[in-house]
Image (cartoon, rainbow, N blue to C red; front, top):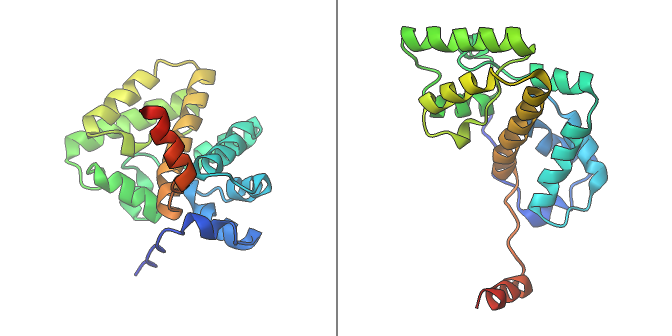
Length: 193
């Protein structure tokens, strides 16, 4: 039986976390890469939720090439071996399950396996896509085919962007985004009129 996911942490409670608690809470938002949260800790205090996401994204994009490749290679393939073995993280399982990637017919499995193999052979890491940004499996497959035409540098950047988008979705489930303060809401309303 898996451990239930904790309720999202209130934004105001984030500032009270020590480094160990911060890393324990936010380490899992980047697949098998708790070092991202550990390094982002140094950017505190975060003015708002977006600043937290941006700090973590800067850590990812600022890492050396070897560390970036290790991060990319730590992600599971779509409907791949980890999915079949049931060894994906709970987040990956939920994300892949939403589009039916955990219960596919043989023809679709073959198509995804071919895409996964071609992509890994071409770039050296799994095809990573923020599934929450897609409404259908067809859209995901189309994105994969299009990304196979990228050069190595472009695709590595694109894959890291997708990791950051996956992280954005997971982060929004881990920490409740901050609400605008009453004074900024009043200013915003004044600017719109």
